[in-house]
Image (cartoon, rainbow, N blue to C red; front, side):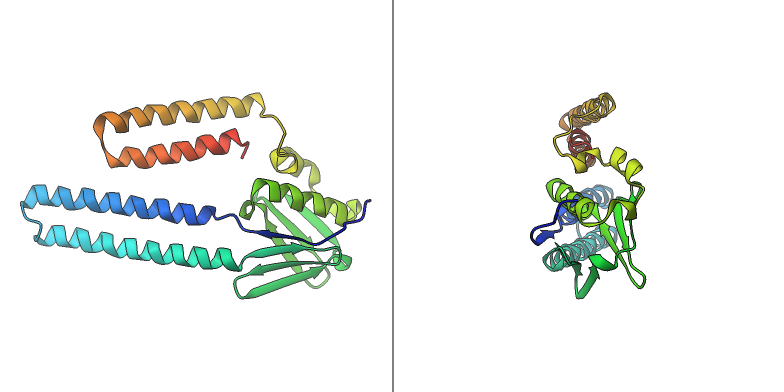
Length: 220
């Protein structure tokens, strides 16, 4: 087993920030729709139903903005550091360290996308979905080298599910290509509906379809 040479540090990918922004766009669209709907019914922008819909959407938008702020704060404070001696994970105000010499077993969980390192007195969870694909590859390679193979469990099913994390250059399978084509066709179809009907609800579905198409193409 080759020796791990230097420390490696990784930050969380900001996908959760993107999701909260999408949610905020949704609430803005929902607010415009509801205000316009109740205005057509009542004929007044000062009616109780219009004002209630506007107040509710403004409240939800403010809560989403707060969520974005919290997500940014989490991202700034999140860091995973791998060294030949110890693994350190900083999450907000908490710092969790585990010495590699004390690791009794390493579990590769294919369903939850987690890596769990156990010691006689402690446990450290690393969620691969928090990191970019190239960082996932580096983290997996580090742990495969740093922890004796006899202490690693469930590697075979994990390696089958997370092929693209282990090797980002792995080509897509026929099934993955078919799924990518499926999501692309669905996105184009819904995009046409949005273009012809000019309904904001279809735009939300289009954004979701684009996201699913990209994930499928990347083998995620």
